[in-house]
Length: 436
Image (cartoon, rainbow, N blue to C red; front, side, top):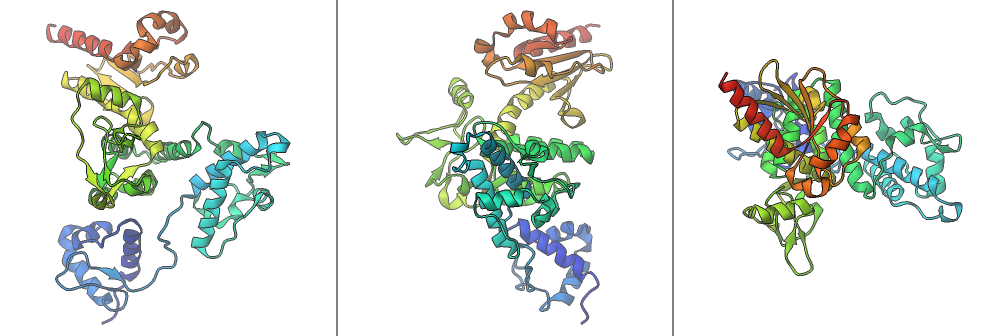
């Protein structure tokens, strides 16, 4: 029987599936992968039958046994995001440049990680050379970045940009560097910025909202659910980002039994005395104060089938998002209409009491009041109030009631509030509205 004209489409879809998933798809899942309706299963089965023994095969009466017979050299088993590699290189280069000449023989950690990732990428591609020492890296850094084949995946990259320009770190390198004490976490955080920029460029507001809620509410999840989410209509456009955001749980740490924080639900660290604690002190304090019940533990043999967000995404995406969702839920329970991350994260919460009464809220979980960062929050002229809101648990150190008298005159009508004050003010508006 002649192979179907749909062969290329089916093979491409299967390769994409196996690039992401460990198990083969069911017929229903493969229909969805191809953009077909469930009622077209019989049609897909006929197409696959024409390819059986040539390109694909499966075991009769065995679920998830579909497999490719043709090798696919273009799909390595390990994926190394090029954007992350470039950020390590840029960060390491700028750090090296700041050092005194007598200390430049020692390679900064970020640069060492970036060069290692380049080397691993070259091994996977099989046809790409990578610099193995500082002189070779500097030679590479003077050449256009696009000459490095893996950089092809970066859209709109000028053919002229280099890492070194006129003997110093280029504007491109300065733009791609990350700052902070923990470079690895900062690089992992940058994927959240990449998601934001991509969603804004493609007007994917609901998709963005779905992903943000996922990393906040499900920082760990079983592989079967992860696989389903990758193919869902809301997250499928963002699957390449999800592949960077979620990693295998067992790659983060090796434990005989994995314990999770009662508050943020992320993996906990084992202390020397054998007890476990969350990476975040606020979680520790609130878990004890609120007597939150423990999360179910996962033994090592099961943990191999679980995914977790990277530590950087947990720190910069999961933890601050908990406060945002909690405030949204509290206001929603009062009967107020709340939109999380409106206009693709222009601010955190849009609170609508009526067409005439609307609040814009940015939630900040800060350990100190940074005046310059406060001034970056702009008053929203399409709302009646713009608030910067802080958790009550931070008030002992922030002293909002005292500090706002000094700060608010400099904030162009933006007001500082505690969560409890926002809830109280919302209740007053609703009571007044109900008695009108």
